[in-house]
Length: 146
Image 1 (spheres, rainbow, N blue to C red):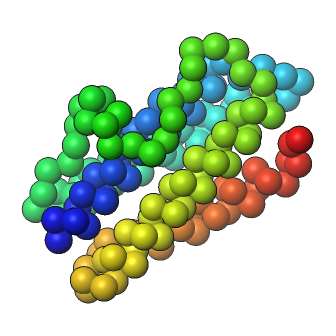
Image 2 (image 1 turned 90 degrees about the vertical axis):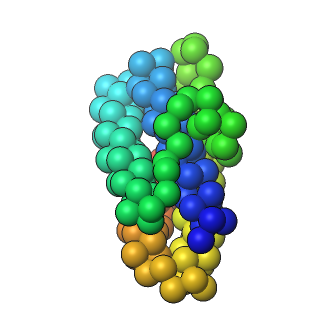
């Protein structure tokens, strides 16, 4: 169980850094589709914020402690922070696709690990994220950025 909770806490870290990254992009995106991107980024970070709470509470339901400090998140994440600078909408899309793929890989690994341990509440939760991340990746790829 300890290794599974460690993986879930790493996911919690990734989600927290991704949230900050999406919010940073929301403030700093530029390009001809600014208004569309600005609104979509807010939708994404609101969605991720809900997942952060859901994952932290899930860790507590497993009788473990969720990570809670930025230092912990930064030490346990696979997601790179965004810089504090203007960024072109095409770069934002490319970076978000990379990050969603990172999250997809992580939740798939957690699901497989949970299944092997017969911890079906975790497995079921990961199913929801797998579907959501796959859909977001597919939709973002339809933009065809170069």
